[in-house]
Image 1: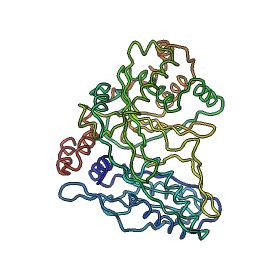
Image 2: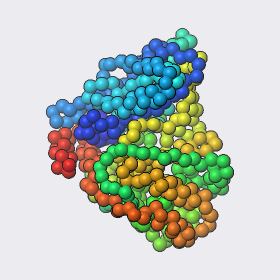
Image 3: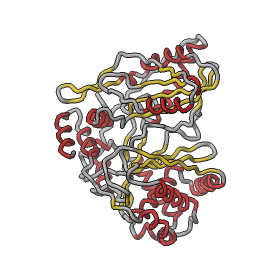
Image 4: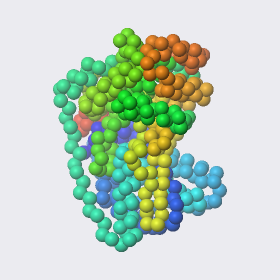
Length: 451
């Protein structure tokens, strides 16, 4: 059986043929000599240790069926000294369309002259947390073969579906609005998937201030950054009811797609607006902790709660954190990474705020629909975020809004209000939540009517 998440991704993947909207990639820089044939052998052994990496999804009798691919990984070696040509090759590789019905959904590119290995997956077989498991198990197998020692057997645990209680469903019914769209001002409304990114860092004295606040107030980085991001959205949208989403993993023992899309709703009531920034952050943290205790498959939830739209804005914490080593040893070679997902230059949301914590800084980037914002607009949002993050913690939210009024106006002037088209993602979530009682032809008809 497929998971709800796999069904949802498969539905959209099969509908948007030849568009790589569900690719996920990451790269590893190579130091020292690596045996590519041995790496290839290790990767193929890994496929048998974690069978979900061999998953394919095909249409059979108008529904989706899971099967396993018998193919083997063949590393693509690119031997070219030209740096620009290597960059072009990597970009083309990351944008490879993966046929989820027929081909192995993991591919590997070795850029020999620039000492880089790039792994490309379909999102249907792996999530961010699982990439760490992938790397660690790859190292275990490679080193066993390299040093000629027995390969450790791994006994996988089942990941049974959890049927949520009525209390969990009631919790979500009580806190979710019908409309989860954030209505920002945008340059242009269209359905393009084309993405742009702007990166920035919190480091040095700024990072020290963040760490001190977390320590003194017993707040997690996730909760701190999420509360500030919600405040940014409130300021630039003027909406009192906001809902964004995030991705939370529930599995640490198996490689596959086990994370859940989790909704984060917040109402900026008069009570909340009168809180100091410090108390506001604690208020949001309490909400987020309650949400974590009531995680439910969003595919299942959309069939239990009346929703007109899903969030068009996401906050995403990368799978890496300060407790995870960013390198693996393969024999005499060391493979290191910044542990952030590269993915491809496509985006399904309007705006995604990505955060990755390192030992001495937090690296962030905004992914956004290229036609919706310009660089000045995103830089102004970054400036506002950092101002709110590092500003006085005793000031009330009301006063913060008054102080940042000019910045807010500069961000939104000469833009048009975001138009909420019928959410195709919501249709896929609803249908996936009914799996296996689904018909692919019905899904296609529903989406075709919207085009």
